[in-house]
Length: 285
Image (cartoon, rainbow, N blue to C red; front, top):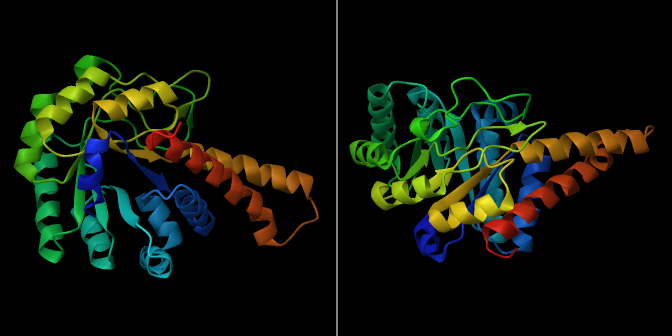
């Protein structure tokens, strides 16, 4: 996945879009091909359990082979070494080990173990790790999750990031800089600390990943990418589009029973969300 290194100096970011079914996969792929943009398909532990680990590997591999297209598969938010090993052995291109709720020492120890295993299997597999808790659910929120860092003193520091990367050997690093998982229902998500992103990128020495992208304003995204964010995760926005489209489709066609007809609107709605984000991250909007 050398594309990260090729693109990081261009001040654009690669979109990482989570899927839960084949409709989501097609929505992301159609959007990426429309703008000739590389794309990352992500699945959390729950999403992988639903789709199937080996099955999604086969699906993404088939897209690469049939279309000769830069589409990559990432195991998002993976909480144990055993689960990390599982996706590496299955053929994922990348994995996120999420030890953000662990102690600093525990997070480093397990992350390092994950990196060592991944590189022993295939040096090209990318391992990402997180520091700083930003919540764990891609859903609509009534209020900020407990223990989520939303003030500067709770964010990841550049010194912490540098020490963590050096101690673990991770390829990608996801800091807490004001981002949260999920979208707040009645207010905008917190603003990102752009200066902190710049500081972390300068010292960390690896590309930075922004989790919890749903709910962030376009201007804040642009600033974050200019400051050093290389990959942006989007999930909640896609789920909302899917949910609303299914409801609309069933309301407008109450007698329709063919799943592929019912789901057509859902694919189109998810694709629209992904297209909008790809344009933004690629500097086209």
